[in-house]
Image 1 (cartoon, each protein chain N blue to C red):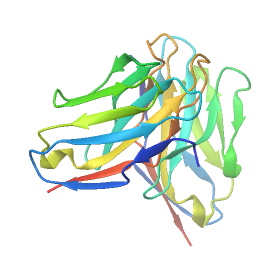
Image 2: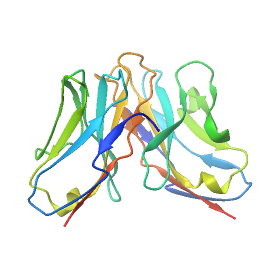
Image 3: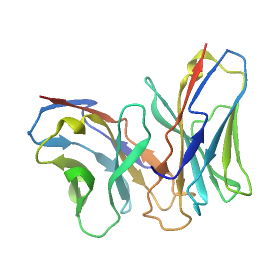
Length: 115
Length: 114
């Protein structure tokens, strides 16, 4: 089965600083990778996804992620944090070999933005 | 708005009771996934249905069951409820085929068991 590891369950950054949220996956075949954001009391919303096209993927709200096969990583970045970025972020991997294309989610990273 | 609807939004019940959570997927989406999110367990995959048939099972308790109806809406049934079942329950839908397609999440049902 696939697995996803998100390093750092809590990350704090100052407003205007770089945001870096880490995600590593395990997969023996090229996976499909996703980042979701969850604001308080809301469902998960897709930020961006990697589906074997460009390795640098741009998403909504100024976020981007780079797929690095050699490092089995898909870290999420944003050059300048905004107060509205405070939320929970989940990395997920989908393995097309799985019946039903099941998603495997990481444990999440809570991002705090300090004014 | 993801296009996925869930009812009710909040549910408060007592231990030992049974509840049903409802999910309507996005128009045309054939797959429905159910997740449980709690503070101590994180986001846990429960079960998936595809076009009316069970496709994959995750960490779903025997006290829980689900089904997907011909109109593609899905229901998650939770019985003999325990305090530990208090959580947010999400459903997500996904189009059929297209391995790179994302799941679209509903707003969730918050279940409180007293």
